[in-house]
Length: 197
Image 1 (cartoon, rainbow, N blue to C red):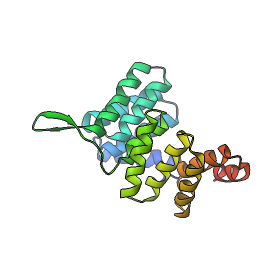
Image 2: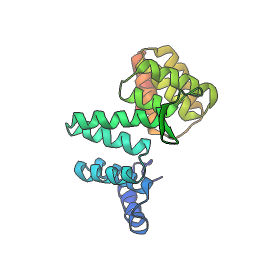
Image 3: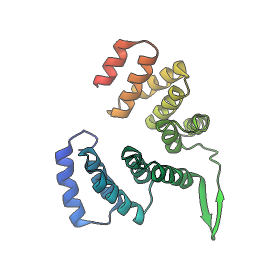
């Protein structure tokens, strides 16, 4: 809650206590990595993400690590990590047999990753549309809006982000997406309003 509110110091205090009590807790390690990244302690953040991934390679930890590698100019490591993100969502092992799965219900998390990183945007839209048909929650709707925006489908993006905003969810990413979509459509007043929020 503190992290989502942008309250870095209280977040750091809570994480320090949590790490003492549970030093191998993956969500705590992920938040600790985010704090260090926000403080520009990139090597410490990378180390924390790697600790989390060694325990359980989650989507958030892999994306965070890949982004830090990219930020620090380690492009090869970033790309390898991003490939792990995709494999996490598309490949599964059963009885030692690796194989790919299609997402008949869509995968909003994978779609968001693609859109945020300007990768496979056709796949991003397809995954987000399928996820929207299956699970109409605020984050799925926002993800679809963001994917439409990245594909240049700005009117559709505005319609979807308007739906997301109706939930009145206090989420910075949703407001940021709304600001970018409205700016692209020439609505500077709305763009400023959502960016300020």
